[in-house]
View 1 (cartoon, rainbow, N blue to C red):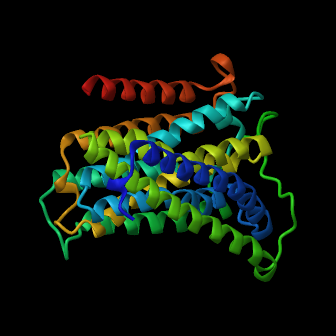
View 2 (view 1 turned 45 degrees about the horizontal axis):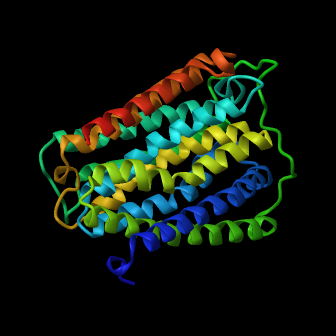
Length: 344
């Protein structure tokens, strides 16, 4: 399939259909993830942070890998880090939807605080790799392997934090507890849920590939900035599952799933850089970037820090019924968009 032969109208139609596919699959996956959390006994925060976070990030990872295979380092990198910023902003929108109290107060869960801190650690590794010497082993920077190891250790530690916490959030009248709606079942009883979940993941992966192809063609045809296209076009479209699953989870009352899905999805999104570095065959991905490519990484880092502060402070309510962290997150995100628009 040669996308360079397609008209602009057809390209936009393909882009819209792929985005809609991602959107619909995201809605279906939220309900499945909530049921899996109940039936496995693993809880909403952990399932949201690991299973749902990784699954909804699949289309985005396909975009980054495809871009890296085409030697588009900026697009691969900015799609990953731009998605982290966009998805954090989605959590602030979910806070607006949850009118009873500040979402970060109501969804008190230590595993989410831990994963927020883990995400900040993961986001610093690409900066260290970029600032350090240009080293590559079989074309892959050691920092990419460190990302993978730290993520794996963090997932295991997150499960341990939930099962045997040394700190516990204070419960209030506004705190929503993670109460299972279904009884736990064995693996055989859960197999159908996992199969359907896997099929939806594959569909989203194909949709992500189509988004990547259209983005590549638009970047070349109209001489657009790869960083801008990655951060504000492909990142937002491939992040639609996170928006859908977060809003749907809030409406279902699965608040830990909503917060955990965003933070966990963002944590998994840092692995886009590992996947991209492996796929980028012209040496270290990080040293094929410019300082401008790190703009959205810094933005995502700032937004995550504000979110983590909100999870710790747990403000009951603020202006408009949302917390200071949601206001800060949205302010940082829209300011970043303004800076990018001005830079064009």
